[in-house]
Image 1 (cartoon, rainbow, N blue to C red):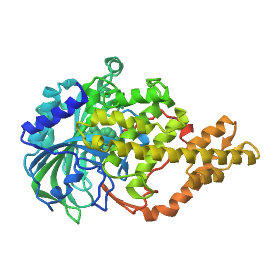
Image 2: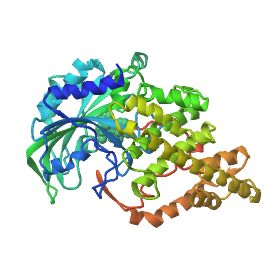
Image 3: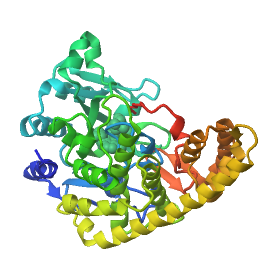
Length: 483
Ligand code: ATP
Ligand code: MG
Ligand code: MG
Ligand code: MG
């Protein structure tokens, strides 16, 4: 099934259940001082949940563009290294604002997955909230009893507050959630594992696809809970992960959401994707990073957020630079090329997101210009690095010098490390890290206060954003993480 059809089926399924289909809100948040980007489907509906505005319709469904590169949800470091975390992704959602609740939300999720999408029941697991003795939040026995009607009890796993309880902040609407996980391990691999381990949802190929949040409480200032008079449903399903499951592949990057981009990168850069199934080959990582990041940057620009030196624009600039750097270092791209991928994006996603068609020219121009100017920086950095190398006595370049290159000239540290290793020189990594830490300490206090889902940022978000992955060229790169 094509990704376009998968998205359309989701929306029409809930439309048939009397939901109003709405378009994605822009990804860049303009009127909320606590958040830069939409990082979950519920963000555009925040005012409904808080009761400040009455929902236009009590049942809504949509596919929301989300970006998780800052604050509580920052997946940037995973991107390229695992197969299912992206910067930009689509979150498919169905919403009830004081209308239906748990019974229907669970029944419909199950019906959609197993009857419409025909996912084999035997590869599904669900989780429910186990309760929290410390603050007295009860276990979600209601959800447990509903799930029992659909799925064997040994596939209902109990989860803690971190994974199975959702709250907006210290106060306000909150509630337990149920996650749905899909086990996409090969039969061969499953045969090697037996008994209890088979139900181990922490395996990287047992992937969370859908989160059903049951907003039923209000947390008061003194920490106690009261029942909400109007209960709400907030669900979010990762579209690219769903496509992975339905298209029978092991990686989001092997779905038709990404393969057209990857084929184009291969052609432009004269490289080949899929060099290793078991470890993170650098070419593969670079291609994944670029195919992911171009989406984030392009949609941000199409939504009106251009790269800049402050705030959200700065986050976008650095995502693009991360992509340029991977292209430069691992695909040998010394000229702008990422802008050429916008064509594929507008062709493949233009139906669902018409802004990618109407803004195509602008998006291309902006990306190309950004690439050009950063490549110039890289060129200048190379000259400076050569000078540093000439002046270095012994076999180690000092952390201070590398930091100066990184901080003042924006020259990526992993590139420094790579070039030095090619010249049989070492980099004083500890010294670099110490300088980096000093700089972080200088500005951290002023730059961020985080309150769960809502992150308060000052305009210059530099410290809040993770920035260049320090010494990436030297780190071991087979990492899988589930949060
Ligand atoms: P994970 O544990 O995999 O990081 P999550 O628990 O942080 O996911 P939720 O906040 O529950 O994710 O978001 C709802 C759904 O959105 C997830 O079930 C998943 O399918 C999808 N999702 C979350 N983060 C990403 C991401 N970075 N890239 C792609 N899909 C994502
Ligand atoms: Mg989740
Ligand atoms: Mg999770
Ligand atoms: Mg996460």
